[in-house]
Image (cartoon, rainbow, N blue to C red):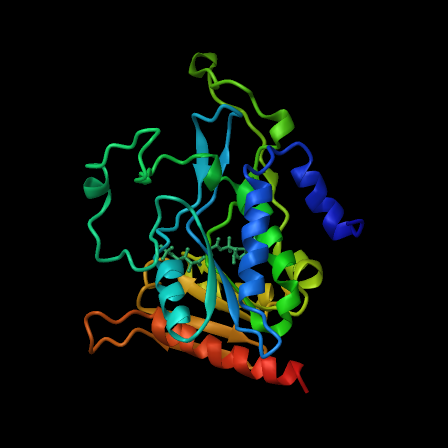
Length: 292
Ligand code: PMT
């Protein structure tokens, strides 16, 4: 862990709070990967990231900065990937959409359950907890990537989460709630190192990696997506514009830009179905090429 890339990330984590249950998560990951790799053939495993991360402004967090994502893209894509035979590690933010839950009632229903210490019912809360934080997201992504290295080209990363670009370093963060009586808030946010390069180069160099590019200005979208593809060595970048993201996306690859549309003739169709189909086909070619 001493390359310039990793040292940037190490300093980002320098004084970050540790991941709760690290040992248990690591054990579960090990078991999951072992279950999906066998002498007779490795199953394809996708890590789908979903939902937005938060960055706390106070260590005992009352206020935070949030990145928008309902988690619909990640949840729907997970369902399609599972149908196409993938085992999926779903790294998501609690309170955002989950696979197979889109037709269930929203929180109003879940709030009918009383969650007690002894209760087996897990309540779902929209209040961001430390689990949604940027630190946890990146630590978990790293653990998943390193654990799935043994899967080689059969592993896919589908990075649909909206990840914070700016943060307050833990060390310089106020411990207690920032007082509003002291006038305007003057705070400097540092840039979060992009994890895409290190994911590709060091954490999981054989994996098939897809990142997403979200813009609100359609004019710059495709150019920015192509720049990200080249800069971070992504196998594909899915370009989407905020308002039309449920109807169309463009998959940017090294040999072209492919528009993908939701099937408008069917009311219950989604754009994730043709999108995942296209990416799975690309992944098949990638696996074949890697094995020859
Ligand atoms: O969840 P929905 O409401 O259905 O919406 C889906 C979506 C619009 C959130 C999704 O399709 C999408 O575009 N996700 C990525 C949004 C985003 O954060 O884009 P970005 O340009 O900031 O980041 C680009 C890529 O870099 C992302 O794949 C992200 O995982 C990664 N990233 C970002 C910041 C950072 N510090 N490190 C990263 O690795």
